[in-house]
Image 1 (cartoon, rainbow, N blue to C red):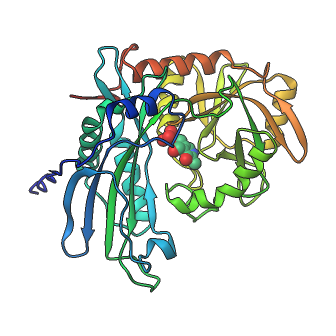
Image 2 (image 1 turned 60 degrees about the vertical axis):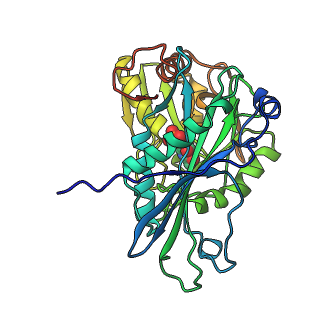
Image 3 (image 1 turned 180 degrees about the vertical axis):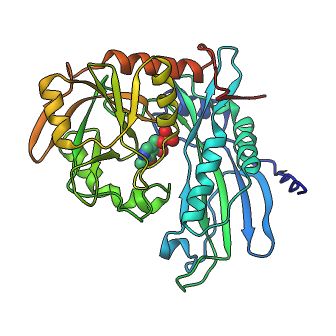
Length: 364
Ligand SMILES: Cc1ncc(COP(=O)(O)O)c(C=O)c1O
């Protein structure tokens, strides 16, 4: 079969990039998700024509008709990945093809068109190269990359749209958790995030809209993140609002909830499964209940719990609270394996630990 021709990106010069001194100030300590760079990539889709008008241009407001279908039926998906700096000051992405594949899986679930994997990766690389001067100087900093797609046909019927827009924007990032604490505290919610047959494994905006009230509740009670249980029995641990979970036991086994369709298949999760097996751990993808978590933390059988995701990498969970009271994991601080796996993963991402799996993709 003939290979589809690569998408050509037109470079439209930015009329007024942010002045250097203002940019330096903005990236000195950017936190997470509030500072944005000069450019974006945009690609349009029309039924019958396919993907077209790929361009690198100034990041600017987008015009939407009030009837644009995304505003009514939330046909929207997104991804999240980071550009890292390697020791030689060049930049690299971590397993971007996994994001491209997950994006297309989300697209299929939301009845949206798929974007060729090469176009997704090229779009990401194009905007990262254009805005490399926005890379934050802060320790552990990265350029957070947000590719997303939404339906912009103006039509009010409930059916898949015939027009879409794909955009990639960048946000210089520092530390994800506002407390910056070495271990996070989590709140077990009574709300559920995803039901079997629903959209839990897709990265669609609607899932996150539904998580805002439970997450707000967790914050209001002084916690860093929310834990969701399964929607059927309300007992099996699924994931955090934006991270997957791993449970580590004193006998060297590690458990993570299985990809049963209701949790996001995290790329950090997948990477940790590989790294933990390399460390000689027995890793199982298996259901684990809240009651068992509490009991095992109390008996000392469970020694660590770690949360993982692109934004916060690998983070120890120190305290768990819910309507039935609270319990502490291990010493309440970072455990040995969490620290080791975090260092290994961060080392691979930053080029200081050998990349044995071809996960790092340099941006020239
Ligand atoms: C709900 C949810 N679970 C897990 C993750 C972790 O996924 P990844 O490791 O690919 O960032 C994320 C982050 O994107 C998320 O939003």
